[in-house]
Image (cartoon, rainbow, N blue to C red; front, top):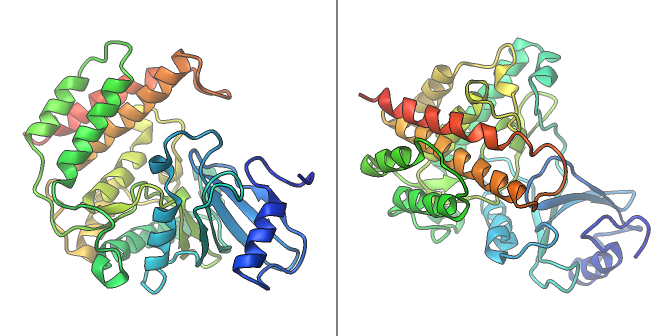
Length: 341
């Protein structure tokens, strides 16, 4: 292994595979840098001194292959290539774990900036921030307007019963990581289960759509939507609701989530929802249920992190305060449902 090999990526084996599968693509010796910021799948920028590409692979030591399915990510960005949704070009999928130690895929490198903080946006000014937020919503509308069958993704998920399955899945996750009393969480789940909305026309769902999961070019346009590991076919309002929930981070103390929505010029939640409704033509009258469900999911995710931290299974710093963040999420989810009455 050369000194430039980052963890999880043997550049010699990668080069040999690319030379065999895509002769002439790579011109010189490969170098690689790990892209920071991802919490799940690993991302590397790989270059040969002339061109750059991006490699994605599952995290080191992952156990469940289905949770980090490279073929799903590769397939969805391949399908979206000729749509209005900007995505990198999918270049190669390798499902043989013997090449670099896990399945991986290669995609084109796209120029752009992932804006993660309000301070970064403040430097650009309110007008550019507003333009960026409008582009973020517009691109989400474009995604939800794609006909899955027309891009070869008709079987990418099961839209029927999507919300019910999601609720069961996250309840199962909660039960698997329960180690303490969580006041209000069963009430929240039961209220959600008793009022599941009837979904509108299904669409491709990103699953974690937010400003720091897209790249923005120099003209404040979205140059690429990234991190498709949660994508499927389902109810598009789950994407909108998570965007709304992330924007309310300061109400519930979500320190690990981007605070970009608090930057001057970033539109208020009501404006974001109204813009989405106007551009998409979709009924958002029951969005409170979806936002409440988003907070339930976030509470379950945090409780899972707290559970692993309490068992000594987390690596790194910054997990100490995670447990205290769960109760406010549960309370806020219940509050939102009460507003329906």
